[in-house]
Every structure is written in structure tokens, then in C-alpha cells.
Image 1: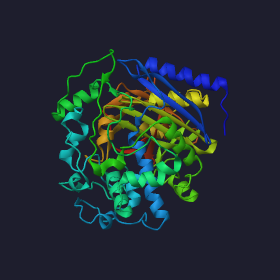
Image 2: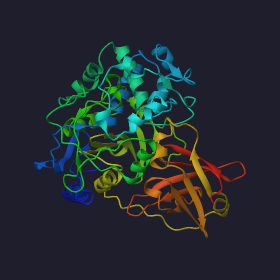
Image 3: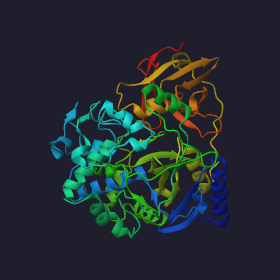
Image 4: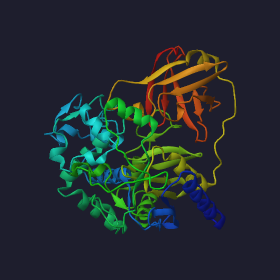
Length: 487
């Protein structure tokens, strides 16, 4: 366990002020928990730009997908009590739900690990609503009975493909509600909020005047091109300070989707939650159950992001972070990171929805641990990889399950440039081509990518029995296969 000195705390403040200035943030609140103590809790920037109201950690935040960790704990508490099993089939638990595809083997475990084979929307014609920047076009919330009028497409055999799946947690929430015969609010209040003293936390998804004012950015060039191609209208919104657009609260969650991301909380309450998890579940689940939840359940390479039971496992600065992120249209952005081996948690709440929040969150995490920026020593590329890696790489089939990597990265080209390799993506930070730097002396197929001004990202090339490169893996558990040589 680390002890933060005054100089450590000042370094965190300096990093927070820097990200507010450099990224033109409305505001950010930062909390650092060591064991049972919230040792740092401060706000930077504004909770509301127009009134200049200061950011206050006690203000409410829509924590979005961090909610999934709470839903996962409720599900695993039911497993502890023998009321639910990880191997229970979804078609048995939700017998009236219509699936199109190989749903027979889908289990609770698949829902918890995002390996159910369900994608970003339940059907292809629902993708536009998921992506639309105009949230005013979203239908008024209903309940679970109205959530899937056309059923759910299952694109991949459960367990064979990872795809982040809000709909899977919609199903998990309904399974919890039926097992408990109570609303999700009542379940979480009884199992998590009340025992931990989280008095300013709920999963009702209703407006609260204590919420920070939400902001977002103009549609990016990438998204503008994607929306135009798809015929999705882009709202005409004005900047209020040259950088940010004021959002508004919309209770757009169908009641059946609350488990995917509807919790509102604040820094003091989330610190109580973090402390409980640092105590191996804090009585919400058995300690050995929590250990299983944060262990690797899915993921082929421990150097990349892997997945537990509702928790992401992310390598950070020579440490293993356990936690989740959360982004909400409108918008809000949250990072919840536990470092169990050091008995520390870092919590970050921003009142803005950004295309990429990682540079902000990583900068603050580095300040907490006083971790230097990663640098990769130059070394030659293995000749066999240099010869066989160039080509075009694409995700395996599945329009719904590929939605996120297809719109954030897209098709990838690897090209030879003398004795080096460069990677170019259709979208995102690698559009301008980035050099591939060998990053593991023991594995010539593991590379670092560092776009200008950004943190290093990592990819692992895969090879066939003959040693030729046939695919690549990157963070977010995305797997791409080599289709053809590059032009």
C-alpha cells in the first residue's frame, strides 16, 4: 500500500489543472482511496461553465457503464446464495424473449463477460438510433417488455467472440429483477447502497438538481463522415466557450436497460464503493467470489486488456488496474480504477462526453503513481514478421458485434517501410500512420504504437503454424484477420 505525501497530492493537482487547460474540460473531480480512506477528493474547473460554478466532488455524476460492475456484483451475490448459476442458460431464464441466431448455449457467464454474441444494437435497423448524436430523437423510455419488439440477433456463437454489449447487461438486469422479485433500485439499495452507506446513489435515471451540467464536443470529422454515409442527421449546436456544447439531461434509458449504465452517484459514495471492493467485495459477495470476478475470464494476452466478470482488467504502468469506464451522451465521463495489490483506487468524474477520454484519465493515473511516460527502445523487427505482416486486416464478420471497432478503428493496413513497419487505420488516432515498435524482447510479434502526443497502445500479431502473420489483437479485445497483402 502506498502513502501519499504532500508532494504527491500537489502532483495530482498539477496534473488535474493541466488536463483541464490542455483538453479544455468543463470540469473534473478526482478521488484517491487508500484502503478505507478517501485521502484526496478535489474538483477542478467548472460544474457549470456559464455560471462558473466550481466543480465539487459532492456533485452528482452519471457514472454510466461503471453501473455494470454493480449489476455484476448483484448477479454474483445471487450465485453465492444458490439462486442463480453462471451456467444457467439465458433462454431458460427469459423464455419469452425471441433470439435470431445461436442462442441455445448463451449463459449468464457470457452476459457478464461480453461474449454472448449480441452486438451494439439488438438488430441492424437499430444501429442508427444507437449512434445518432441527436438524442432528442430517442423514444421515451419503456420497460423490458417493450425493449426488444423485433427480438435480438445473435451474430456469433456465445464464447467465440468478445463484443462490448449493453444489451447483454439489459438481459442480466432483467434476470436479477426476476430472481429477486424486486426492482433493480430495491435490489441495489439492499445489497450495495444501504450497507455501504452510499446515501447519494441510485439507479432511478431521473433528473437531480445536484448533477453537474453536462457538455460534449462537436461531431468529429470521422463521425461526421460516418453519419453522412449512413444518412444520420447531425444537429446544429453552438459552442458556448469555443470548445464545448451544453448538453441536457435525458432519461433515455428503457427501464429494462438500467443495469447497463443508469446509476448516479458522487465522489464520497463511490469512494465507499471502492473501499468495499478493495476489501475483496466488502460483504456484497464472498471474498473468493470477488477474486473470481477480477480474475481473467476472457482474453488471449495478459499484456492487453482482458475481462473478468463485469470488470475490465487493464495493464497500467507495470500494474494491473481492475475497474470500468463510463461515458454518457450529453455528457458525462467516468473512470473507476482499482489497484488491489497496492490497496488503492483512483476515481475520476468529468462532466463532458469526449471521443477519447483516455489521455485525460491516464495523465491523472500517472500523477497518482508518479509513473513516467512509457518509452520503447528501438530494436530491429524479426525478418519473418517484416516479410509476412504487411497486408489488410479486418474484424471477423458481424455488423452488430463489430460496430465499435469498425467505427473507432476500421480496416487496418500494415505496410513495410524499409526495415520497419507502419500501421494505418481507417479511423481514429492511427489514421496518419504510426510506426510499429517491437515492445517485448521475448516476443517479436508484440508491438507498441504511439500516435503523436498520445499514450502508447499495444498490439499482438498472431501467426499460423508456418510462422506467417495471420491476424492481430489490440486492446478492447478486438481481433482482426489478415485478408490480403497491402497495395
